[in-house]
Structure formats: C-alpha cells, structure tokens
Amino acid sequence: MVTDPVLDGLRAYIVGGAVRDELLGLPAGDRDWVVVGATPEAMTRRGFVPVGGDFPVFLHPRTHEEYALARTERKSGRGYKGFTFYTGSDVTLEEDLARRDLTVNAIARDADGRLIDPLGGVRDIHARVLRHVGEAFAEDPVRILRLARFAARFGDFSVAPETLALCRAMVDAGEADALVPERVWKELSRGLMAAQPSRMMDVLAQAQALPRILPGLRVDDAVKADLDEAARRDLPLPGRYALLCRASPQGAELSARLRVPTECADHARLLPVVLDGLDALAAGPGVPHDAARRLALMERCDALRKPDRFIELLRTAGVRTAVDPAAWQAALQAMRGVDAGAIARQYPKQPDCIKEALREARLRAVREVLE
Image (cartoon, rainbow, N blue to C red; front, side, top):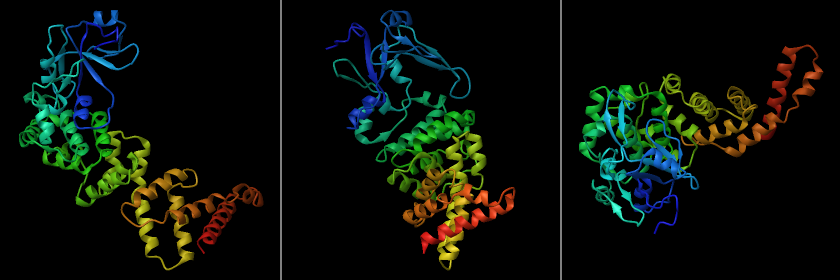
C-alpha cells in the first residue's frame, strides 16, 4: 500500500540492481525507480527535483532516491554517447526493461511487491548466468566493461556463450575503440574492488577486448592470483591497481591514458621499487646492511613525508612476498624521530654537511631499532 503522497497515483517501479540483489539475498543498496506514463512537468508538480542531463531523472523531495522516466533509446552514432532517447508518456515498462544490458538487471518490482520479468532475469539468476538482453547490447561498448565487472562481483555466475560472442563482434566492429578513459576507469576501478577481480580480466580477455581497452597491460596467471588475494585481504583500490600493473612495463603510460587518481598512479609506480627493495633485503648479509637498505627504500618512497602511503605499499607488497610490518614500523618511527632542525643548527650555511649528517643520524637510528 503506497503511503507516500508524492507517489500517490504514480506508476513507479523499483528496477535493476536493487531487485537483482534482493533476489540474491544480498544487502539492499540504493534503489533506482522507473516511472511510467508521466511527463517531466507532472514530476515537477509533485515536488520531484530534476537532475537528469541526457534524459529526465528526478530526485524524490524527501528520500532523494532517483526516479527516471521510462525511456527507449536509438543508436545515432558510435560509442556509448551515440544514442537518442525517447521518454514519452507512452513508453511502457517492458520497453524500458528491454533497453537494459543484462537480463538479471532487467527485472522490476511494483509497489505491491510483484515482480515484472519479461526477459527471463529471474531464471538467469537461478541459473547463475549473465546474459545480454538483446542485440541492442552491441550498441553500447560500456556494456562489455559492465559485463566483466559483474563477472568479478558475482563469482558463481557464468557468462552466456552468445553474450561473449556478441562482445567479440563489438570489438571487431571497433565499438570498444570509442570508449573514453573516464568510463574505462570507472568500470575498471569498480571491478578491481569486487570479490574476484581476476574474472574481470578473464572476461575482457575472452571478449578479445583487453588489448583494445587496456593497451600495454600484461595480465598473466600470477597477476590474476595477486588480484584475488588482494581482494581476500581487503586491500584498497590503489594497492589493487598497483598489483594489476605490476607486470606491465608500460604501467605509467596506462595510468596516464586512463587518467587514474594520483594515489593509484603513485602506488603503481612505487610498488616495483618496494618489491625490489624487499628482495634485496631478503638476500642481504646482516643488520648493518639491512639498516642501509631499509633507509634507502624509505627515502626512495618518500616515507618521511608520506608514511601512511609507505605502510600501505608494504601491505600491498605482502601479497607477493613476506613482509614484517612491525620491523618496518619501528624503522620508520626511528627515521622520523631524528631531529632535523637540531642537526641543521650544528652546520649553519652548510647544506651538504647537513644532508650527510642527517642521513647518518637516521641510519644510526634505524640500525639501533634493528639490533
């Protein structure tokens, strides 16, 4: 029974991910609504706040949930922006659902709790299959990335063979080449934060999209295992991205091309430095050399100014090799405990002497905590 006066008489349906996740027994997230038979003017009169750009989307005046007018779309150009939308009041719910990407995302629930499932999404949820809704899937290359991301999130779902075949045809037709860096990064970052990130890479590879969407990226079995281990350890995004790029000599170029956040680019750049430093320590002959190597590694990673980043890099490196966090924390604290100001006052106007004395003091401090 609808008790919200703003919704009274409005044909509104919960659609997409909220319905899918409820059927999977997953925690409820944000709800998206589709409104059938309404106009923008009617929505505004009810108090909804318009926020849509390409097509009419409104925020509920109290809950701030998104309500979109039912729409159809027609391909009018290349890429994910090459669409013309129609949002007339005659668009049906079934027509709106038919323009969606996957059957599991094309299920609606009405105000009384009844499911509307014209495309077999419930069946595919039970069968644990990710299947495209129709041939219109091929009109939007972002859907290749979304498919791969959903495979990473739902590890027990397979991808329908005909859906993979359609993705390969899209790549062959050059649709994937129209993807802009911002959209690639948005979907990639979400896939990396999923429960099984390796599956995103697998699906992109099976779709033959990996070299077109992420040129220069090398993803072997070891990288995929690292990504899944990072997910098990609940590493944040910068660490997961760094592990993804670890085997790629062109990682810096990829970061620039995708315009990734600075923190992610820095982790990708510094993780090989940390891993090399840890390897050198593992082969080292003893404490005096350990102290020098530890100090050198901390200096190269700018650990004095960015201690939290350095510790997070060590945590990421722990996916690949043994790391003693307590020893590194102690060494970092010792390094930061040296009074640089006091040393500078001992050598007025002698910058070279200050630099040498400061490094010697830090080296002694690190050595002391290791002995």
